[in-house]
Image 1: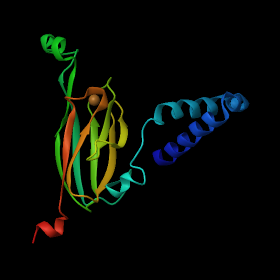
Image 2: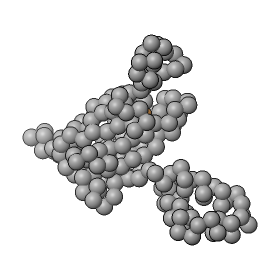
Image 3: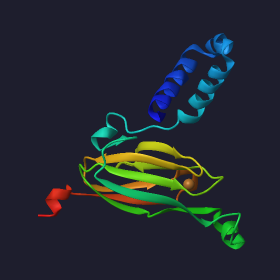
Length: 184
Ligand SMILES: [Cu+2]
């Protein structure tokens, strides 16, 4: 459901940019629909999954048939609600991914579910390629579980971070050889 919504919103933002406000004005015959399309277009257009080039390194889908599963929590380390105040004065609010280090096997679809534990903080997930390019960038909304099935096609170490709470909120994914190869 979200997948088609995402696609629709991407389409609507392209239309909105291409044709300008004139089109949106034409759509005001159905003001609710036009407003919804415009607002989701704005909020979701900055997020994306790996493109064609990135998909050679990792394929990411919302749903699939995972062979492994990992849960990653967003942990509040030092926040304004609970302090310590001195820590926040020095570092600002500090969050962390927990765990911050994941190991997956190449070619093994792995379901990663992010639990945003905070009620009033958005987090995000940016996966970096070896050249520091951002392969994917997705939103992790407050008090929500967000799942993706990752299938890495290259072995190695990949960094990830929450852009909003970087550098503290970051981690690494180690992609090991295929599961059947390591058991030999
Ligand atoms: Cu964050």
